[in-house]
Image 1 (spheres, rainbow, N blue to C red):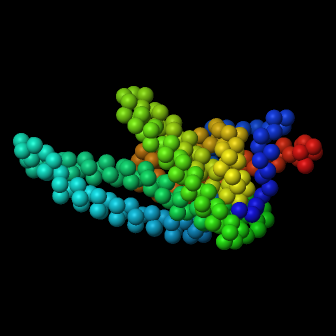
Image 2 (image 1 turned 180 degrees about the horizontal axis):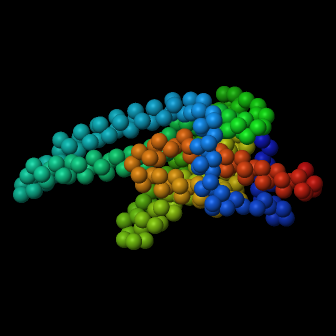
Image 3 (image 1 turned 180 degrees about the vertical axis):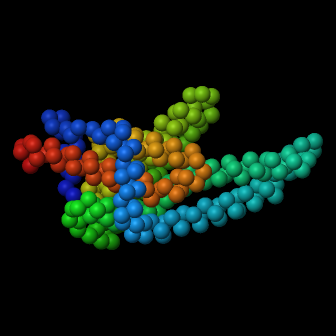
Amino acid sequence: MAGLMAFPPSSLVSESSRPSPLSFAHGVRTVPAALGILRRRPGILLWLIPPFLITLLLDVLVFWSAFGWVKDRIGGWLPSWAQSGWMVTGLQAFTAIGMLVLLGWTFAWMFLLLSSPFQDYISAAVEKERGKFVPDPAGVRGFLKSTSLSAVQSVILLLLTLPVMILGFVPLVGPVIVFLWSSFVMGFSFFTIPAGRTARRLSDRVTLARSHPKGMLGLGAVVAAAALVPLLNVLFLPVFIVAGTLLYLEAHDASEEVAADDPQRA
């Protein structure tokens, strides 16, 4: 979409004057910084209410229908000797918990996808909070382009995640692999939120993430850790969107400083 900031891809890949990568701790610190911004400007949250409610409604409907279907049939899947009341009740509870964990994990994906139309406005509000002039986000054309790119990005990341989730069943090593991958995917997703206006192509988003991998993983690790606690990731998703925007804008500032020190890049 039309740029709120000039962030040419060449500034990301120059070997002679590459900006210093943001650290892992820097990525972690964006979360409390985002909380501070939301305390000062709670109106930013208004842009997130529609996608949040839609995602919550979809998850409730999926849980209601899926668990209802399983609950009615779970007794028939057990052998006759295991159909005592406590066994069926225990399996129903285990199934409900498993579904809640799975839906809590997929909630972030769906929320990010549905909130993509509003992310330009969120990013612009965060930029204004930092004391900079921000033009209004682009119109319908830019909106459609940004939304389609975000949808393609989400599908690609989801397809790459499925085989990693299978590796998660490997004892000891599997959960570590899943956590590291989740940190990367979540960090990348939140870090590149403003990229719809600046780094327009998916390849530019990947290049941007490669310029600051530690900062991206720092934010992603916090998101992945929150996902381990039921409902915590859901409540903190607005915070993570603002944190990802902050991290992106700070990466942009670092690139601008390098460009200012190198007149040949102008």
